[in-house]
Amino acid sequence: MLEISEKLLGEIRLESEKAYPNECCGFIFGKMNGTDKSAVSVLPNENKSEQSEQYHRFVITADDMMSAELYARRKKLDIVGIYHSHPDCPAIPSEYDRSHALAVYSYIIVSCRNGKAAEHTNHILDPKTNYTKFIAEEIKTWQ
Image 1 (tube, rainbow, N blue to C red):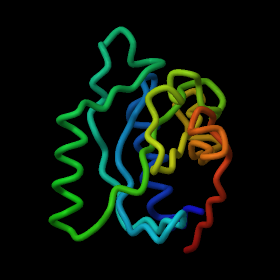
Image 2: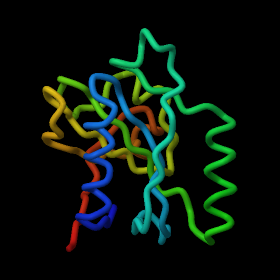
Image 3: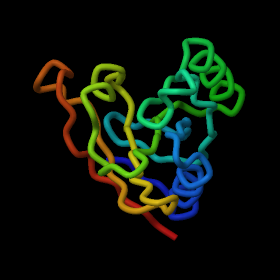
C-alpha cells in the first residue's frame, strides 16, 4: 500500500496539467516498511524523452535516478515511487510503462484530459508473475 497526502497527490496532478500536452514525470520520496510505503515529498523530473515523443512517453535517465537517490540519502528518505501522466488517455499502465518499471516502486499515473487532471491510479509490479505484470496497489490518502 502507498500512503500519500491529498496535498502531495495534488502536486502530482498539477504537474500533469503543467506538462500537458506532454507527459510529466517525477519521484515520490518517503519511507518503506516492507511492501508498505508512506510518501512525504515529491520531486518533478524533466521528461528526457525526445521532444517529438513526449506526448506519449517519459524517460528518466540513469543520471536522474542517481540524483534522486542522492537527494533521498541527504533527506534520509527512500524513493518509494515514480509518477507520470497520460495526456488524453486513461490512467492505465502501458506496456512501455511496464517494461521500464522497477520492482520496488509504486507507480502513480494521472490521466490529464484537455489539460485538466482527471482520474489517477497506482500500480506495482506483481511478484507472483516474476515482476512481469502490473497490478493495482492500494493507495490511501489523508488530508
